[in-house]
Length: 450
Ligand code: PNW
Image (cartoon, rainbow, N blue to C red; front, top):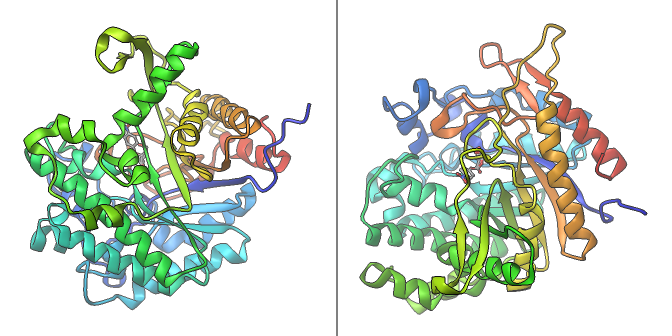
């Protein structure tokens, strides 16, 4: 049986600006909320910061060569808003734009498609200071302006844009207790949180519109990490329950973007804390996207339960549930089948990219200089099989991006978790491709799961 990935299936790797670039003060970059947060004692493990990270700002040519060796067909990276607009609005930093032009051209010369994320959490600090960051809808407007700038600068070279990466990680986790684990580390009440969520959705919609306007040939989507509800045992009734749970547990982000309105049950549930919004806002949020990007990390296991009121119940992970090197990376490859299936069944999504999938491993460089991360290969292989399973059933999965190209700054965990398929020595910045990068190279070349 031919078990190849469909023709044109795209294989890539992903990173994000603050996690890999470094060059925090180079060439006129303005500070972002992650610079401030990581420099605030107690916020990031061991006081680690992204000041240098992998120094991709200076070593990007090297990284492009690594990708080329692996046969990667696409590189998903994010633009640092404050590198190109140091205050988040107004003045543009030409040197910042030059960097991304060099990176994009370098990728194209290596035959690697640039996939650009506009926002991967590093909000310009000036917008936080002057406007309250995502607490203000003015920030959403400025995000639209920034997207227009990027799309008009690079729309001739970049054909795929993602507005926002993972809504929950900079809204709830940044602005609401018990979140406040991520920048800016503010504690709002639920009303405030819901308004932050709304402003982020509005920013997405404004971003879609601006990119369409300025780069009419480009495709626009998002990269979201939904709460991935899967049937714990795939009986018909559990599948129905998991599908219902998938829509409901993502009510405030994915469901609202794809349905163009807040589901009634969400507004009812939030009651007096529901966000303030207008019909015009919802029209903007409803702007059609060309593709849905989903980041895949862990499952929520669902059983049908008619007594629960909503028809489903989510099971806790038992203490012995298998996990990778970070406790929240539960081994659940079936998400890579169910998430695309539900996107297609619930909302009829016609183009799905798996914009992130990967895991942290306790990687060591051995005496011969090798990193034999057989555990990461195990992890990736299982997910790739599930991607193939979905594709074979006709679910429109068009590509897969591994998180991450490089070990990098893992947010509040600093450099303690390694997600790369390439090892980085953070003292010397030396890159060492791990065995998993060879695995991916062979998979891409064979276009099959190996
Ligand atoms: C993603 N969770 O974040 C981000 O897009 C990356 O920047 C990050 O490095 C990567 O995953 C690995 O952590 C997530 O708790 C953070 O479910 C937390 C969760 C999921 C994704």
